[in-house]
Image (cartoon, rainbow, N blue to C red; front, side):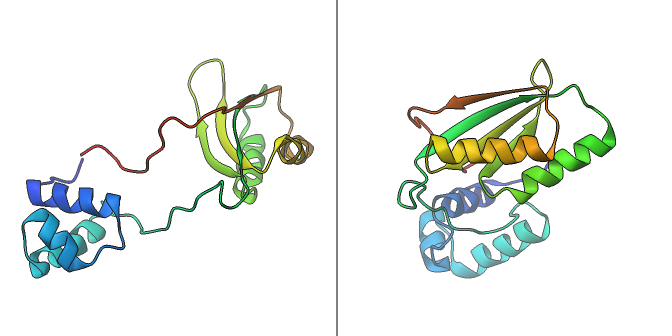
Length: 153
């Protein structure tokens, strides 16, 4: 069951999604409230699990990670042991930014960030050395049109 958000909660969350390093004073000003109610709301939202964590978003390009691949994985294996090995392999690879199990013809989609095609090939070779997969298709993102971590409120 979703946590019930009132307009102040939503405004606080929007402000935090824009810049979690903003001071309580800044958030209070943006939301039309004062610091104490904002702090109390943030604490409640954390305790309720609405706010999972605060982090920093780094620029992949500034770090030389210019290539973003979406990797479609099909497998003929669906046993628990295979899945555990596959998930372990994904969690061990820092290049994998996201991994989703899908319904349909494709079993998994991965978002992989690397320096270049050669680095992707190294990732690919390491992955298939760890787990058996039926088919892998890599799609290189030519341009990132939209990327956000902000959820719609």
